Length: 214
Image (cartoon, rainbow, N blue to C red):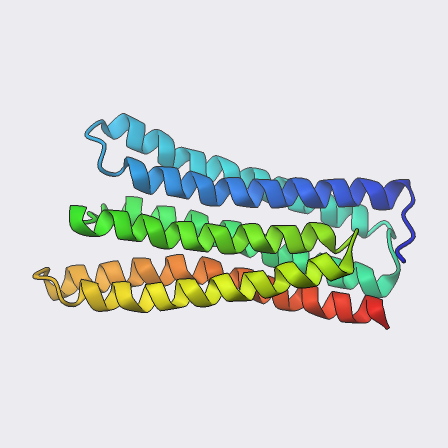
């Protein structure tokens, strides 16, 4: 069992706030891609800015978690595992922000017949993260449930991976120029990386679960 003093409880709350901020960053990216078909450039820009705002919030909370952790909360072994997890979760938010930059700065145009499928792929990556989030939250409460959500995360990442490959195949079957195809493939690959990073985090949680069961 984990010893939970006031500092540990504070860190767990900050940890959950960080998870919320990471999820909000992915959701903001989803909103931004949805708005790309909007003819009002100001609304599109607002959605893009929201991704950055959410990622900045995630970054700020990560620093608070790390600051509190370095003051000696939890046993050293678990402390290191938790710090590693926070850093990996933050990489998911960073990746979502990078995708928004990739689209906005390259002035990328997503063809209408591919727009819905790219959004569906992003939704699969978001579902993967949400399963991961449940695993992370249960890590402090119920190891059995945490393990179940780790398995669910892996299952959803596999589903996203299959969808990603099919979507890339579809992109290369269109009449777009090679440059446009390569640009879209890169976008799809980066969206898929959100699910990959979630699976990486679930692997870390699985290790934490195994350690706590010993």
